[in-house]
Image (cartoon, rainbow, N blue to C red; front, top):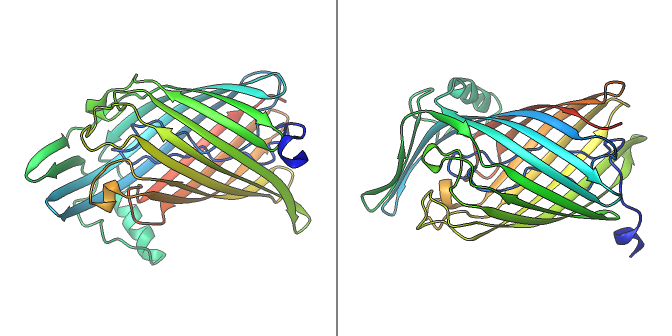
Length: 316
């Protein structure tokens, strides 16, 4: 009981933190899955501000059981994230994304990366750096998009309440994006997750950990509406080792359930993304630089390859 409901954990030292990653499959990122966060609230004081860029490259092709899926896309997502501590136990937040879907330029680079590390390239057999998304069932096209598009995404509001090492995080995603451009789903989504964490030592340096379980309730969206599920579970776990006072290395695993009632695991299956990266603190300036690379580890409905880079200014 003391462990669960003791004094709230403070983020002044950014003990755990996390790479704010999401699943950027172009047909899934329209929904309100929250970015990866830990049990720690932001530090008291001013507004915690982060600017991030995510590049996700996805190439899928499947034709089974009367269902035909084709995805060749590179998604670029810029996100402005604001967090504010309210009192000892509460936090509020705002995320404003800008989404850009195009053919990109990383197809051949990713093919060579997979080949070098002995990873599968089984789905990467289409033309390089083209753009196209299509899903058909029984000969009827249910979604088609062959022109690159960009625009503001779905804005997300969030709130958190900390009870010792357990934090409840809730969010609502508003339909500010455009479902025809895959910058939004056309509906509001709700999320609720329970986060818990702590720390130990490894080689006499701090090793922080955090995990969570949550559920995402989907509104009646406009992207494949007849196939969309209503509830999606999600979970994650993170380890961050503080190698020095300023430099840390980290790994994260983020998994989600099925979004669509589709018999193709390339779109209708669950997802698992494994990320590795580092962060570097500039304590005098109150800045944190983060970089990470993410791979789909289940070959399901997650991008083949994703890059994350962000700069965060936190209260000191």
